[in-house]
Image (cartoon, rainbow, N blue to C red; front, side, top):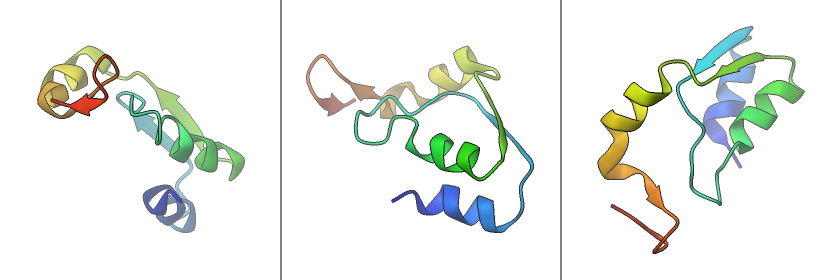
Length: 68
């Protein structure tokens, strides 16, 4: 359940800009799917390199199954 995505749908958000998709296998794209199904225009990848750099310490590492 993606509570954040559902809250955005209730707020009647029309366009959402997303820096990157959550790389964690459990969450990957789930919220985006909810938003798109509700008719929200989702733009993915805006400033993705910068977002990855900022979140580097928290990102999921599929090579060992842990976050850094």
